[in-house]
Length: 514
Image (cartoon, rainbow, N blue to C red; front, side, top):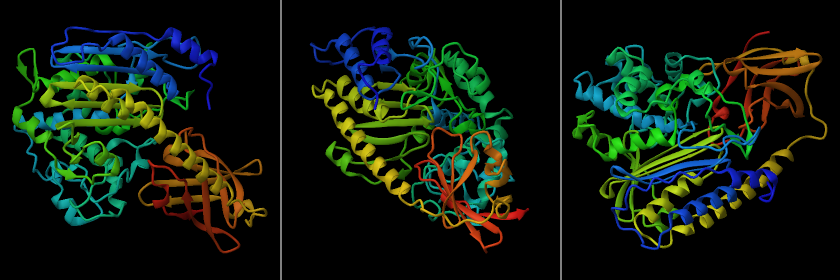
């Protein structure tokens, strides 16, 4: 645990930048509400959750009623303060840009929501031929493909695969659910939507988003290019548990997670939605398309947390989650990549928008959505939320510690493994690609070829034909490799690497050469 009285956190408190845009309180707020006190409260919350920085804004129609940047860009160096133009990877907030792009192409007459994907991408293929032939553009945007949440994401995470290759490889992943029956959050289906945008418009997803959204809105610092992002001199650098990590390129994720932006630019994006797609008198997207995008398509179950907080329905629209809260419809979406968690929420009936960008891994952006909606709607108990989410955090940390201890206990006192040469060779999973196991200076090295920059590391004996795999990725724990062996050589292996984001357990590697 980090010490809140440490010099680092004292620096963060001293150097936090406060930007308050008070352009008028034209809606009902508690008369005693003190924006400075709110800023101090947010900064204290940031300290409690050990987050290097938070940049956020609350928008009411055309007015920015609260905007603040708190903390530092990085825990290393001279701890420069973040500001309204500091760039964050916004991850899955990119999905709403993709949905809007599809809506614009429908307005242009170049697409229909119910067009078959294969009519625009003849090479598109799913595991099931019926799904291949019947998947529509709309299906791509509402997470009902039959694949489970995050299925296939190892194809883009840290790999050198291009976007089209990633989409083509998903055909080898057998679905878990029936088509259009269950929710499964699907990044690769959104990447497919990006390929549809290119086929229909003649422009890459990146070029379309820039020309039809970023430029008209004046979002000058927002980019989908890692190289452009990395050369900025105002980046909120990624962290895990307040420890600085290297930035990865997510260019190949494209339409699902590639955008990087600032709270200043994202304010313009939120106002675009609150103003019904009208910018400087120009209608960039029709009301009909916006209605389609914001309509619930795939329902989700209501949990205990939802019931306690008065949520009666929730589900996924197209590029947005939707639910009711405080008797109002809320459109929202989060974004998450190693070192970044972000959130945007809209309450259309209140003409209200909320943006939260952070450069560490926590539930704070989700918490801030509820807290700032309560605050903006005049609820006096809005300060309850940090305590609630800190309790969640402590419970989750305890469960994680217990799980880690249980996993470590599986190591055998005398592991039963063969000589190194019995494992050396090339192995292949039909969907993912190849793993190469080699012997280097007497040690076994395990490298997942498409993502070898992060998923390479040595193997150490663990159990019966099992090895621990220590790779280079700071986001994930170590893996346990279990080999299929006959006492003389290995014919294949599986990977046990527990996490919430990537399905290593679904990979099935078989030897293809020595």
